[in-house]
Figure 1 (cartoon, helix red, strand yellow):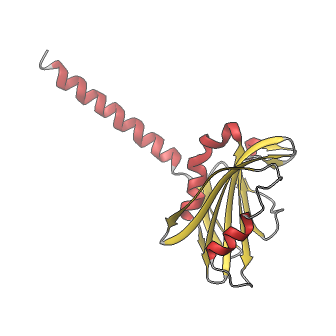
Figure 2 (cartoon, one colour):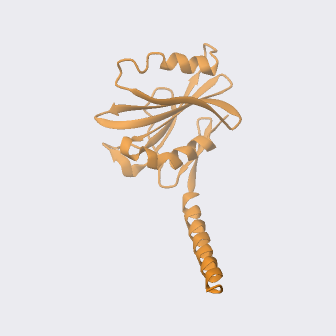
Figure 3 (cartoon, rainbow, N blue to C red):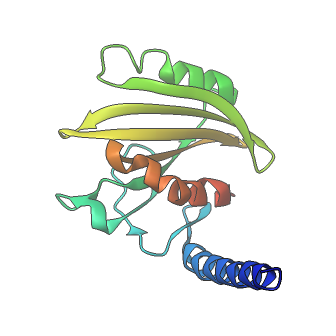
Length: 176
């Protein structure tokens, strides 16, 4: 029995490590987006989407979630020239001052983090878009005079499963 236990533990560890290496390789596959003064990585199974939002400079999404030709799981990058020279906190606060009043949007959480040595403001909210209930995560950051909003969204039931994909974009985002 004493000889079998170490053998079983060794076999278990080999299987465990093998599985981790295989999964890691699949999870690390990504595409690079470099255009409009921004760079980020996005999942290899996603594609570049049409930018339709005001001040939008980039959009990527999961084509498997498309509804009427538009992915319901996506990340949109918006760039706002800060002509009023607000600091980031003021711009963020001014934007959300009336955003949740009588709009059908419901705030879930709010906070701030440090990402790539920069202060980032974050809000998570839900809303119905064309009859589809979605959850959104907006990350606000500033580079020079420009304020960038990285807006990730998915159907509410898909949102949690997409966090690693959203984080890939957030964590690799760079602006020139």
